[in-house]
Image (cartoon, rainbow, N blue to C red):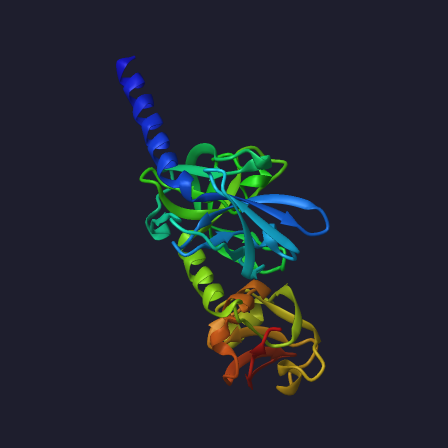
Length: 308
């Protein structure tokens, strides 16, 4: 019994110390748009940049931030990225304490994690759990997949959105982003390594640049004889069902009915594979795209454009 008590005491101390370390950097965000909403965020830098979720602040007319000590600030939207459900806002203040960051690549399934936020406006609510799984994907409202998502059973509520997920050392390893409403104990956080990259780009440029090729696609299985004959590396492809008028695909002489099986020498088995490859780096570059047309395998050169 003594050993169990000592273990519980050590667990409690880890949660308490992590919460005490991070709580001064966690903020409540009040949003005025069509209605009134709230969310959470955390100080990313000492000069007032705050990371939160895109769905918390997207389209906001007015933003207000309340610190743990009760001090209040007006905030400006720096930029948001619906494709990763991340955003950055900024306040003008002094003596601001940013969080410390962990490395989300070093997270282990089963390790202790603590979620901190402001659900329903209650300041600094703390829940604890474990990392349930790593490498999950989550569909953003924009339709793209968010990769390398952390699954945890640390309870989240709507107002937790944008708050930090921290390890036992009080280092932020994720940004709380979603929960599965009908389920118990299934919650998600965007990995902090992803969040740091996206936040840095938003601070520098106000947005994330991505490319597109101007096709609407549908995932389809490929006949086994086609796979063998053409030595394909995937069992599925993306059927082009329509193309943007005068878009990159149409200018490349692709046709409705073509099945994309490779882009930039990478196998394509689903539309999400294509989305992952269409980053800002591809804008204006001439790249190979391989399709099946009837019984033929054809390769064209396509030049992706910047998403607007």
